[in-house]
Image (cartoon, rainbow, N blue to C red; front, side, top):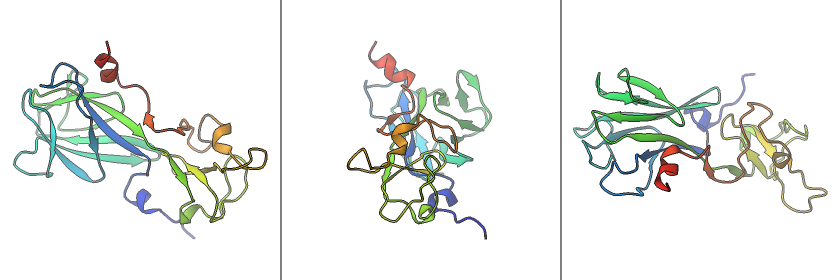
Length: 204
């Protein structure tokens, strides 16, 4: 019998992660700009020269680049597609389509440089249907419908994170630094995967 696939996995992404685009400090017309959060699906990005970038309808007349968050085998990337010669990535000319990752910096047609940052929002709560009855990869105790678990933002596997008396509550996600399945770090609090360079520059 083939393994069941969650709606998030079928769509090529998992809950708990998003890409945020941070403008280079001093380049935009205002400082300390709110990051642009890349949501699910294909989005369009507009903005010319020193204009603050903003989202538009994908493929519309203002659209300068198409962006889509993609996940394969637990690896998150941001696909950027623009007219030939318009994209620069990490100060180098890029092809018209490029897979960006956390820490990359890019610009379109000489516009404001944006840093790609991966934001982790941990999923803690009851297990999704496909994990009920499966064994926790840390303690091997199966998940029940009432189990409270932490779900890995990279591969979607779960680990116990029960509340209550610590002497009896299973809290496997607190006992290991990384997911036993995909070896990515366990993030129990919301925040960036690592401190974005442009945020560091904001406070220099």
